[in-house]
Length: 519
Image: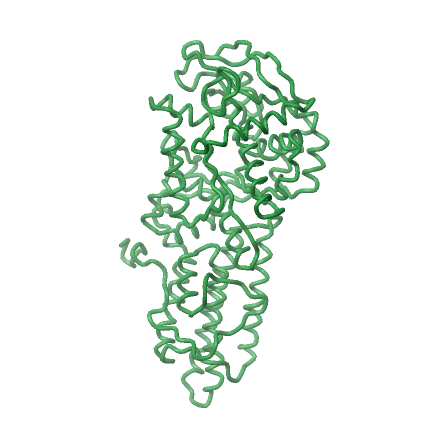
């Protein structure tokens, strides 16, 4: 229902791209699957508030979102756009029919929140009140603060989001899914899957309290149409779209291990509703093997908000600082397992990240090395103990990075910390090695020292590619290496005589603040 802001990018999108790039650099076949949530109630609500159509909102905002992801270096291998896919509705209706054949699904008439002024069934984005569990401000069906599901009519102080009229109730007939009928199957599935600790705690609490029934169809005209005046619930539509995409992927490329990156506020939908729908439809083989959550990134001390305009828009930040700086800054403060914050001032100075600046200084020093050696990489000569230790460090550090790329231990924050440490260690190696490079009697040792410096650049390019892809590709190309950066189990030196012409690759300098201020 709006543009992507830095809070969005800091959540699932760049972190998932980081994992995909890292796996590819290891030679793994990894694909990035995502899509626009066209049939969401927030799209329909935004259309009412703007005086336009849901289809127009879905198209305009969806196009903007896709453009922003591309500008951030996020590569999508399969991008679902339901409103623009002529076959989407039929596939979702077919999957819903499979779900409806389950004995856990029944058509029932229940009291539902309603706005008489708008003649509108109130659910999800159309409803606004306070959570009966935690008291936080909440929309219908899910509380973003505590993650618990609800029915809109259960919210206290419930009002219509469109006109502010206090809600009443009316009976509505629809398909309802008894989630509790699959409680044990869900518990066993999650036991065999990896779930982030915050998600695991939430789902265990929900299972202990007893899962509520879930409405599979809503009164309204936006979405996958069913009988007159009803459409598939937006979250059921999204879950079935996920399963449809996963099924298509496996048919084309064979079975895959799926790691699902998601915001913690949507945990109920992805870790409860999605699996239960898969069980009911006979599609459990296409469920995620791992769930990697994120909490919120706050701007100052409040959550980013599209509707309130409390945001730093991602495309503005990308245009000013470039994708590498934005990705690096957001991965450093990724809200993994906790709420993190960014100030407006910090958001306007993304290129001042210490790793960003440190890498620029270290890489800039290669210009002098290239001039000294005529732009040619030397072969190794005699080795000192310091040389052996630095080579050992390059290989051991790579294994440390790899350990943070398992979904079970995934940490963008930890990965950035290791990158910063790598640059510092490499810069320190240069500083301590420079004196011996001036002595003719140590020419053989100097050759090894310089070869190790160029090897460090190669290692950095491969390890940093998931975080700063533009810079890493420039380094890789500068070193005369083919295609995209790749990791090695044991790092091999650049061939003797490889030409690395000056200037050495650096970060974008147009947006880097000068010492006396911003430029």
